[in-house]
Each structure stands twice: as C-alpha cells, then as structure tokens.
Amino acid sequence: MLQGMGRTQQDLLGALLYQAGGMSIDELANHLSVTRTAIRQHLATLERDGLILRGETRPTGRRPEQLYVLSPRGRELFPRQYQLLADLLIGEVAALIGREALLHMMRGLGRRLAAEMERQVVDETRIASHMNQAGYEAEVFFRSSGTPEIVAHNCVFHHLAATHPEVCELDLALIGTLGGGEVEHLECMVRQGQVCRFRLKRSE
Image (cartoon, rainbow, N blue to C red; front, side):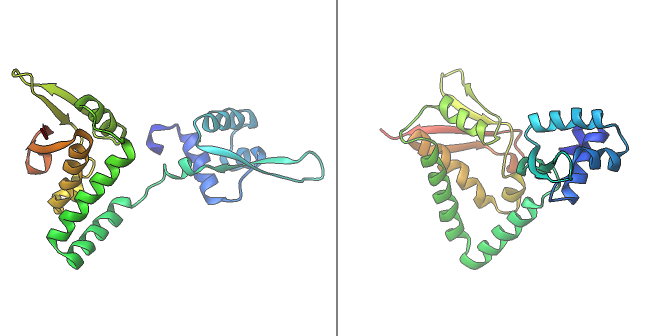
C-alpha cells in the first residue's frame, strides 16, 4: 500500500494517477518541487518494483522526452472497493437463488479452483502450499495421534463468510478435492475460533 512508501514516491505515483498519458522527468520534478536527479532515483526504484512503466516518447524539437506511466500493479496500490462489490454480489445471488443453490455454487467454485491447481490428489503439505499462494497462511499440524490437520491463520473470505457462511463451502470443497476426501471443519474463525482447522478423511 502507499502508506509503506516515502512521501515523494507517494506523490509521484499520485501525479501519474492523474496524468494517465504519462509525465516526463522534468514535469515530475516541477510538479513535486524536487531535483531531476531525485526523480530519476525514485523512478528507477518504482520501475524495478513494477509500479511504473516507460510509456511513449514525446517529441520536443530536441531530444524526445521519455514519459512514465502507472503500471496495473501501481494502480492497485490505490484504494479499491472489491470487498463492497463482493458483498453486494453475494447478497444479490443469495436472494435470487436461495441458500441451497448458493451452497451448491460455492462447492462448485471450490472444486473448479482445485482443478486449476492440481490434476491429481495431493497430501496436506501440498494443499497448505496451494492455500498459502491464495493468502490463507496455512500450515500442517500433527496431533499426538499422528493425524495431520491443516491450520489456516487467515480466512481470506472472512468478511463475506461472516454474512454468508455458505462461502465456507468453497474452502471445504477446495481442500476436499485436492485431498481426495471429505473435510471436517474442526474450528472456524467465523464461528469465534482462533484459526480455521481442517481434517481430511480420505475415501478408501
């Protein structure tokens, strides 16, 4: 997020947000009241991090000016209302099709997501690895009996699931499809749990 950057870099990205066609080093230096050398240094850092791109060159009658623009990744640093849209969509879908159909839809989405990750059944460690790529902050924990459990420290759909618990079915279908079995949801953050804990019961 922008808050983790220095003031000049924040202002530089903000200036490019307002000038979709791009800005030159001289324009940025004048706009931000800093030296061209400082602008070059900030541009090099931001370009390295994938937050800006080199755009078109603009003829000046002398040496063409290189313009810099925000990259798609750079635009994502600015506030987005994906959560609001997701809430509205889930609410609308639930009202239109009903709870049972929503449950069926969430399970289908979980299975589809699993199919995009793996083409065969995998173990808990591999499942946790896939979940981590999606932001679950998951790990495999072994009980004293040796039974493995997948523990997720981050519920990636927490806000949605708090309003529509049917969303949890996506997680269960994802894990169950990857692991080739039924899933016990032993603990859930939406239900005041400290973590989300899952145990696979594989088909014989």
